[in-house]
Image 1: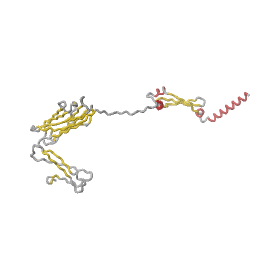
Image 2 (image 1 turned 120 degrees about the vertical axis):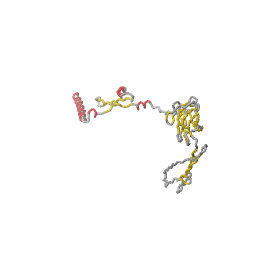
Image 3 (image 1 turned 135 degrees about the vertical axis):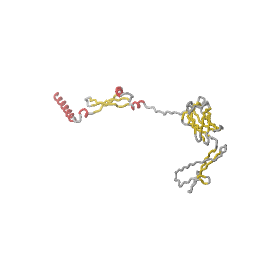
Image 4 (image 1 turned 30 degrees about the vertical axis):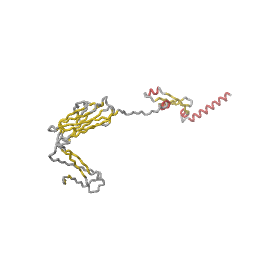
Length: 297
């Protein structure tokens, strides 16, 4: 509803965390002066319930009412700090916030002499666009910018041999004409970046030196073993030990070492079932030796 020239929206209730949005259109009455008129719109929210904080219950928005085309320009970079070898990408946005179309727009971007434009790097609204004219003052031209439309131009530069670590500013400005040929502008914006020659420091962790003997022992591995019966109640366990080298297994066996270990084992020689036979044989041998001594006497 409109009450005494004020647009009023009613809300029954608004729960905690809930958001309500409203939009409407208004028309500026004619005639307008050639000098732009600044119109401030104020929005206020009120409630029957007590509000402990009323500082955030009001906001304002300013619009420009004019018959002349009015353009806004913003220039930014993709980063704020660069190294000497980095490429720098700039973005320039031009918006027509007025009620009239703008024609024959001329964009000028003044670079420092420490930077060189990279040919073929310009895009306009995401599509490839013509390279600018000029070396350090780059120039682009656009035919028309309709009401409420935006041009987004991107391009890249690189540092040259004269660039040193420092802060550098560049200024972009736009001029245009209206339908009758009247010239407007310039509207301008600047962008500052920092160039540094500091390279990242790469640190190498300290490596502890290993004892060569301990390292050798840690790098050996038992690859196989075999049992050898000597016939004397002893068995030699021969273990083949090879180094963990990056070579096929047969080569490891050829160049391996071996060591022996003696193990007493009557069970392996005679077996568990022949234990009684062993004892009888031993007694028989003793008797035979005793009888031979008697016959000798």
